[in-house]
Length: 218
Image 1 (cartoon, helix red, strand yellow):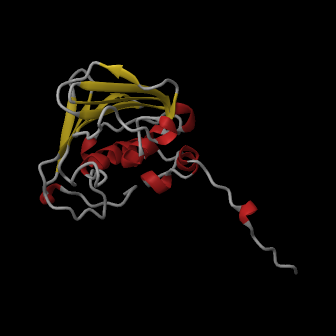
Image 2 (cartoon, one colour; image 1 turned 180 degrees about the vertical axis):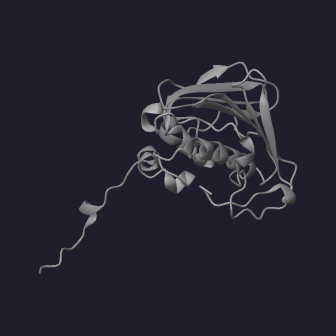
Image 3 (spheres, one colour; image 1 turned 180 degrees about the horizontal axis):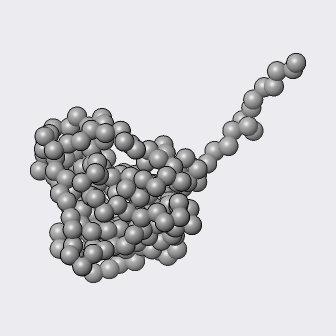
């Protein structure tokens, strides 16, 4: 039997968004056909808020608000100081989401539409994406006060299990993950569910006694 040798021609390099869609479990702990995926996406967004890239902020220092707008749409607002000179640097595919926000970028790859807004020092910028790919150039917009980032995700139902939806029990969400060893900090994540007449919500803090160290999918 002749042993076949592998070469560079046998290597299939996927772009970031294609890689996430092919193996979402590597990023979120569960696959597209798992009913827990929407909940894991919320946990991933919360985890990014409390554990940003070191160039963005220290762990457990940022305040994040996650708003569930519908069964498959939600908005993440992070109160975070930007450090751009004139405008934000472009990231994946010339979008406003760069590698410092890779986990939010991974969520965007599973979306039909994504809206990104960033503001600082009286300057505001926004961009519309299809998934993670821009459908329009970055635009200037009226900024809120302070400095921060807001991303609105509308998940693509065609790629999810039929009937998939965000959970109503928000207490099960995990903003830290099994490997968090960061010290307590002033940061927090507030999750609000706007799907009901009486808005429900939960606050995920950085106190050690409030952490739930569970592996994805548990």
